[in-house]
Image 1 (spheres, rainbow, N blue to C red):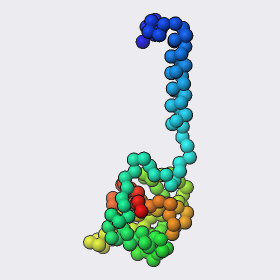
Image 2: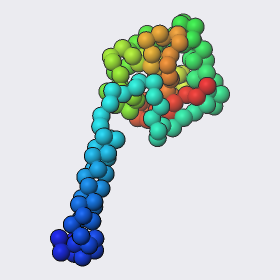
Image 3: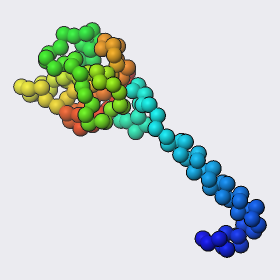
Length: 143
């Protein structure tokens, strides 16, 4: 739309000024709304899939109990720092996330199932996530 068309549609210079002000204001508000903020590691992403604790496999529920008790854990890697290199979980400082193996009964190795918990108090995590595909996707465990 050219200036002549805008003037014809909105009449006076005052109408054009009002339109210009509205466009500038909308752009400014849109910019403010999307500015980056420090991520809240405990915030649940709006598009996060979830799974109820009671819907986890029995082995997953057992691991959640072990996490709350501080162990004992089956594998040496259980309770070690999870780096979140995939960046699928909310961003946080190194050491915030820890990983735990969820055994798959038919396998003779660790398998792909894990629970990853976030928090600086391992026995009382802020949030835990379940993955069946070795960190390819996560579901928030809802208790």
